[in-house]
Amino acid sequence: MARDFIHTAEKDLLIKNGDFVIGFADEQLIENVLLAHQGEVKEFPLIGVGIDRELNAPVNYRNNRSLHRRIQLQLTYDGAKDIRVVKEIDDLKIDAKY
Image (cartoon, rainbow, N blue to C red; front, side):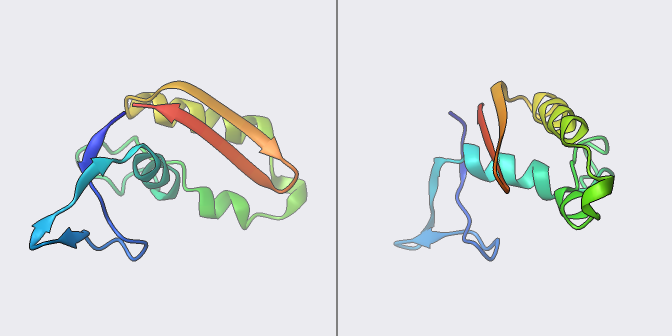
């Protein structure tokens, strides 16, 4: 489990008692990789799935196997292990450990 600064849903750092909150941030790290497009993270330009582009594509252009593979590769590049991507009806369930 990775420890990092915790942020709010609006991507602001969470502050409690005048100090930044630090906690387990695996879900935040996964979310950041999924939302980022390649090239957005300047230190690691190859990181990013760009999930919004995939989800907004017409259904007949979606390739679930390709998306699952991209998610696994990108999370691996980011340092995640034990990655599982499962499609549940209209949702993706992603589990990974850092």
